[in-house]
Every structure is written in structure tokens, then in C-alpha cells.
Amino acid sequence: MIAGAFAYFNYKFSEYRFIDFKKWIFYKKKDIFTPKYDKYAVLVYSSNQIEPKEILKKIKPKYHILAVDLYQRRRESDQNVTFITSGINTLLKFVQRFNIYEVPCIFLIKREKESLYKQNSRINTLE
Image 1 (spheres, rainbow, N blue to C red):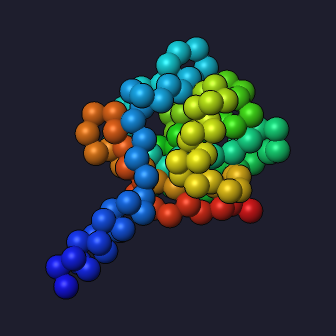
Image 2 (cartoon, rainbow, N blue to C red):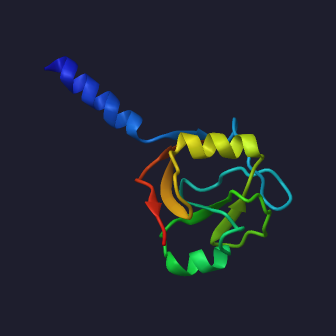
């Protein structure tokens, strides 16, 4: 019974993924992204498919939005949204780590310590 509980706990703990922004470098418009909020709503999209303004009209998260552009365009951030992107190798790792199959999608991350964040919700595909 103890082994079963331990296995279940490990499964539930591993269900959500981690990202360390010190190890994976993302870029804002002109500089390197360093997180400053404890929680983010992560929006993953491709600006080649749809403009972020169109997506942002559909969602009203209660946390600051971290918008990851897979098409790698660098945009100006504002008070509610931080636009980031990265090199293709980092973006591929990011997509694989969080098991992203369709874009646009959104999920929450929460700070565990310093620059280490843990996925805090399931991934929701936006239509």
C-alpha cells in the first residue's frame, strides 16, 4: 500500500513540468527575459498564424501574460503582456517539455524558487 501511494505521488508530481529561466534563455524585444512575477499565464502562439491582439481579446487571465511566439517575432511588451521568443532549439525543448500539440494554447506557471517555475494548470487550447 505504501509503494502504491508513493508511485501515485510521483506520478502526480511528474504530471506537471518545470522550466528554469536561467537555463533556458528567452528574449524580449531588446533584452533577455528575467521573470519578475510569481505567477504567469503562458500563452503559446505563432504570429504567422494569428496576431496576438486577436488571441488576447478572447482571454482574460488574472495573472500577467507571458506570450511565447513560436514564429520568433520580437514585440514590444506592455503592462499586461510580456512577449518573448527564443532560438529554435530552445523553442523545440519548450514545446516538447510541456507537450504542446496545438497553438494557440494557454497554461499557468508558478514560481517554485528563484527562476524555477512549475506548470500549475493543464494546457488549454484556444479556438
